[in-house]
Length: 342
Image (cartoon, rainbow, N blue to C red; front, side, top):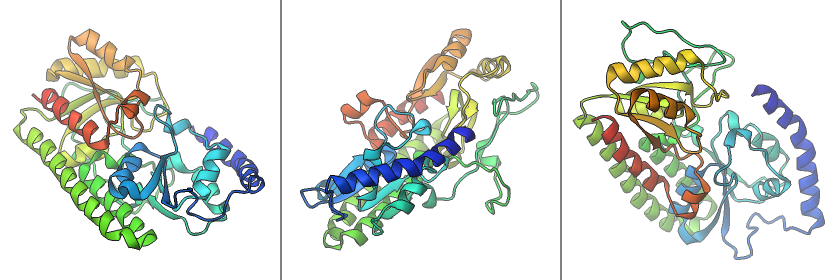
């Protein structure tokens, strides 16, 4: 994974040079308001921020999703067209984690020095990725004893001084609706600076959308408070650390959120199967864009059902075309969470 990232960084300056040359030859305007309709231009790398921007900006901006629906963000490489689009936008929305290291070269080389940038991870207190019991990480599996208690996500606090090299942080900060509110406010602030004439419109939309996010948060809290269990099991990567911390839930999973592995060891699968049987877990989760092979194996061995839990980082093309939003996908999570914790 690190090797692939370094290769991207070596190749990117050449691609960027070609892209900017193409822009000059084609006579593209240097004006940041590059759309013909005169609206401000917003480019987002992740679906969630793309959707947030649409809710806030409404019809006053052109909002583009850079990494197309169905694509894997971890293997994304910007095309010359993508680079031109970023370099000419007014507001660039990105996650800000390891998956977005490619953007540094693009932004440093862009001739447009008026681009405002909102990185989701800069809007919240980030959490260090963790390897919990039974989880496979970096090719190693972790043993389990029957005497061990289920993992409590909220007990694993980390030193936020970030003194150690090699620390990796969960990038999926929006899985907590309370974090989503912080990101929405940051986007609103940037839009009001870029386009003060429409500030009142953006703020009104932000207030209305924040109310919906608070309703979503209350729905999750009501489910957790009224449930008899607090344990989730994922036969998949686990990009929901902010979610379980927010609501005081426990979890087991096959891999951390940004793990490069796709095939768990036999010991990891056996641990998850034993956990499901011992704890009488009714639902095994997988995430969108997953093959959910591991979840299927666990379900077959335990007789329980599988279900998708939406992380909203990037969504399938069919969901995108159907008009799914962060709110609609997260509200679907409320319903399946109720069943999983019953």
